[in-house]
Structure formats: C-alpha cells, structure tokens
Image (cartoon, rainbow, N blue to C red; front, side, top):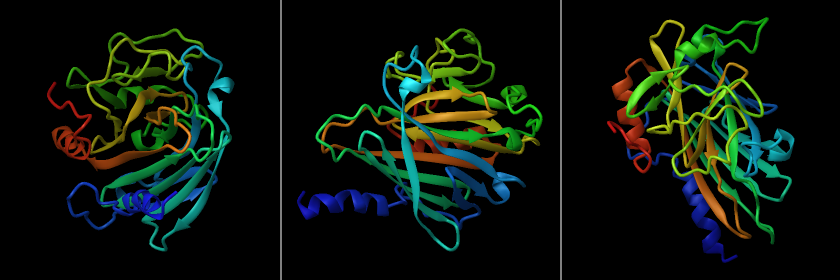
Length: 286
C-alpha cells in the first residue's frame, strides 16, 4: 500500500470535530474496561451510562438464524486513553481477519465515535453489522436489580415514525420471532432478512435516532450511527442503534460514525442537532 493511502484514514480519525461546530468543554468522561464503556459525568446521571461495547459483530441472513451462527467472534483491546478521560482508542480483531479501529471522544454533552473497519485479508468478510448495547435502566429510573429483564423502561423509550416521536411499545408491535421478546426496526434499504432475530416491526424508522427520557424527564439519552443496520429494543433494559458495515471486500476499508447524546429534554433541539450531524440520513419533518 502506498504511504499516502495509509495517511488518508488516519487523518480522518484525527479530524474528530467533523461537524464544523466548536465543541463545548467536555462534561463527560469515558472509561473502558473489559468491553464495558462507561460514560461518567452529570449529564449521564449519578451512576453513569454503561455500554457493552461491543456486544457482537454479525453476519447477514440473521433474522431467522440461530444467534450463534450469526455472531463473528471478536476481541477488543484498549490502545490508548487520555489522562482527562475524554478520548479512548480501541482496536477490534474479528475472527475472519477484519480489524476495526475506534476513536471515542467525550465532547460537551455527547460522545462521538469514529471507526474504520478494514479487511487486510485476501477473502471477503461477512461482517455486516455490529452492536453497541446501551444499558438504560439506571438512566430511566426503571432498573430493577432483581429483574434485569424488566420492560418497564419501554414507556420511557422512543424512536421516530413518520416524522414524529413515538413511545414504546409503538403501534404494530411485533411479538413473534426466533427469539422473544424485544423489537427490531430495520433501517431503510437494509434487507429485512439481515437484522436481529427478535420480533421485527413492519414499520420503518423515519430517522436513525433511538433513545429514552431520564427518571425525572429532564434529560434525553439518544444515539445514532451512520450507516445503521437497525434500531433495537433489547432484553437487558437496553437500546441499540446497530451500525452497518455491509461486508468488506479484500483490501477494503469503511468509515463509520456514531453519536450518543445526553441532552436536556428538548426534542426539536435534538432533531436539529441530529440533522446537522447526520445530514445524509436525516428526515426531520417527514
């Protein structure tokens, strides 16, 4: 590979601002230990927000498949972390040879994710999507220590359908799948055969945001990725926006961008911010 071709992805990772807006001083701090990314700081609440980062890398044809056949084994290692806990670098190694570099940065009231997935092998990778699993029980105030699979948090959780915020359980709630319960919304253009094997909603999200309200309804936790595979309400008081890789040809690299917002309860402001950060996928008002 020519040296210049190596520099382009590295420069992209370094340009973490991306939005053209000057970031506010970080109110959040990051910690990654044994695959758990914890977000600390006042916007995240007293106990912080934990993310299983990452839960799984997944193959296509997954909707009706056994989960063990869908998952591509992987390991993730910590590459570096700044002393002020605002920037972390990780590297994931997939069993099929793919490597994913992650730069995660706390910026004001958000966490910014910049990823590059590379296939250095001579064979095509079936890594089509991956799962950051956000645990929202503590944030919503509806976590039950003796019942980690409580679904009380649904009434605090939302996504956008036909341009409007809709709380869960949404209309047309699906109830049958290989594994139940839960709910999946396939992203526009994603084959409905390639998502989580949980109940699949017939509805398509009007944008890539999924989130929830805090215990006191004064804050919102919301997340989005570009590109994304699905939005998912899981079984461990969790919410997902699962990012899309789409498979990688030999030598191919793909950039992936994510955000996690921890903001005051102002839905129109959140939508404006999302539209600015993800103009290619935003459908505000539609």
